[in-house]
Amino acid sequence: MATLKDIAKLAEVSPTTVSRVLNQDETMVVSQEIKMKIFKIAHELKYVSPRMRHLQEKEKMVIGVADWNIVRPDRLNVQLASLSCIADSLSPKIKIEFVRMDREVPGRYDGIIAFGCFTEEEMEYLCLQSIAIIFINSNDQDYKYDSIVMDFDRGIRESLEYLVNKRQYRSVGYIGGLYEKGEVRIGYRRLNCVRETFAQYGCLDEKNVFIGEMSKENGYLLAKKAMSSGHLPEALILGSDEIAEGAIEAFQEQGLRSPKDLAIVIYEDIKTLESKWENFTRVQMFPDIVWETAIKLLLEQIQKQRTDSMKIFLPGKLKLGESA
Figure 1: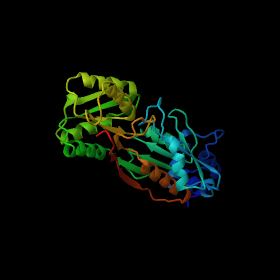
Figure 2: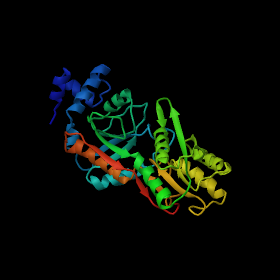
Figure 3: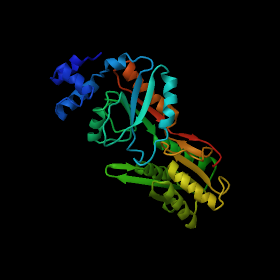
Figure 4: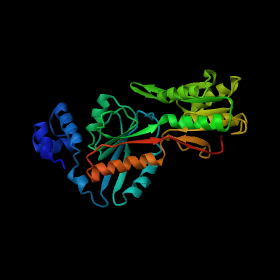
């Protein structure tokens, strides 16, 4: 088990400096380069603080959720409200609080669940805030950290397998949203996957692909555009919960029924609102098993001092409902 002395020796500083840096003592005067060096060594040695090793019942563990690469900063992450129940079932003696992290404001966390691809600067930013990190659908290729990889393509493939081959709909379309601000780009990977998979199934028709801003309001407008285009497909995949909320509202205003008049599949990413359409057919990209696995891996790092990194692959899941 790594100690402060082990880190201090490799970083060529005193154990006191290491302790104060890892505890994010803001009164400590030390260069950013030294801080990063200490945290990198701590990560490499899988250091676990004495407080975490001996965490007692009723003590609180704080886990940060870095989701700014997959959820717009001006949107809620509704999933966070349900994570405490999952955590309680996995570690009933320890109170775990989940906090949505701010890309601009650093904090101090006992563990971090990080979603999406991060720049080198962002990786350093995360590493300076916690020793225990798990990345989900990230760009880490060196197995330095625990990671979960979701099979995005499978969810779309299962949808088309069901719509095209089993239900035999002759035309399938897509309504989706994109968001871009600075280095954050959301929805582009999903759109590429949709186009490639539609092409593989021989049902890609750009006239049936409607793209705009990622919002409920735009989902409504895109659905109106699809209906007025004169070539509304028999089945549609709606690219997010917000897009789905707006689009389904527009379809229902026009009296379209699902699946009788239009089959619908909702591509459900991390929830940003409470859906009114829970009974619809959906692709679940982050079902509870993803969060359960992420929390388990973090607890193993923090409490059991597991030293080997793990990479786990989980598929998106098609959940059949009343809309297709």
